[in-house]
Length: 235
Image (cartoon, rainbow, N blue to C red):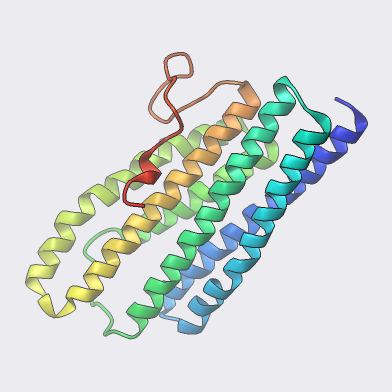
């Protein structure tokens, strides 16, 4: 690798970490807005999403400029491909955080539910931890942390899958809270999608570090499917 290309890669690493920090901040603030029924904080999350959008565009343009100028091969090309994918995933996480903020605004304007019929706190904690671990694995190309993210995704999926029956039962028992419960379903689904994007980031870290295309639930040697399509359901 030439000195100029190394400097460019260092710049890209800093930029993608900055996008990750903004996306993580958006998620944390959106979660706080839900928990504290804070409309002003939720509106701040929505307004600040523009920062992530602009940074995402800047990273993409920088990657394309690097591809055109240096025409990297092998490991260098793999790094650029991963940065492009991770950049897009982080922008989507920020977008989903604005959706959580919108749910927070709605719920804050309705009577507070006496109880939530599924483990929302557990789901929030796991999704936020998965994002943090995926970003940490990106900073240090930490294979161990990346693999922990893949394992943790099953827990989030499990909570989300069991949530429906619990919420439907709560709807029948408390029909006056129907709208709030529907928004709780949307929150659960959004958190599950954020966790899936964290998995994508971890998979791309493994791709950069090892050169293997890893898909959650499989092994590098027998997994030749295209990128996880779960995120396309319902979009």
